[in-house]
Structures are given as C-alpha cells and as structure tokens.
Length: 113
Image (cartoon, rainbow, N blue to C red; front, side):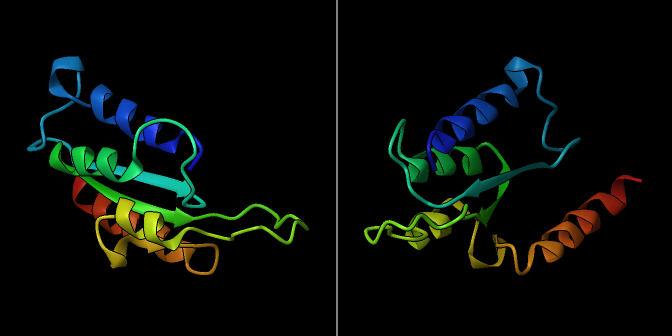
C-alpha cells in the first residue's frame, strides 16, 4: 500500500459535499483499493479507510501482488491490512475472483440506469 492510504485520504476529501461531491442520497460512494497490503509511507491505511467509511464510502480491497521478487525475505501479501481497509471480508477480491467484483459493481449501478 505504498501511498494508497494517502489516496484514500485524498479521495475522501474530494468527494466531500463542500468540495463538490454529491450528497449520499444522490450518489453511492465506492472506493476500490488495489494493494499488496503493505504501508511504508503516509498515514495509517486502516485509519484512512475508517474515515472514508464514515464519509459514506463502500470500500473494496483488491489484493494485488506484482511479480514476486526472488528475494528470500519477500513477505508476500499483508492480509491484515487488506482486510482492515475493506468494508468486510465480502469486499475483498484478488486476481482469481476479480470478475465477481465487476459483477457486484454492475449490480450496484443497475438502479441508476
């Protein structure tokens, strides 16, 4: 999550009604975070996601891992943060079930059409 937490913070601020964002009764706010779960810069991602949820966002977390380095110290995905950022365990996706996320988002948009 290199700087993803900063992205969560900025997106939350930009969608505030004072900054031109539409009210919750008009638009559903959704945030999709692509992350490996590691945060090594910026604010705490868990705190930023809590603020976004309080602002009315539904947050989906997509576990993303670029090619694994050959370094034996490679830690893999940080599942704790991936889960903490998402609304709940049903809002976590990866490359194996990404199509399910696409379908979920389609369902959310049907009432808008």
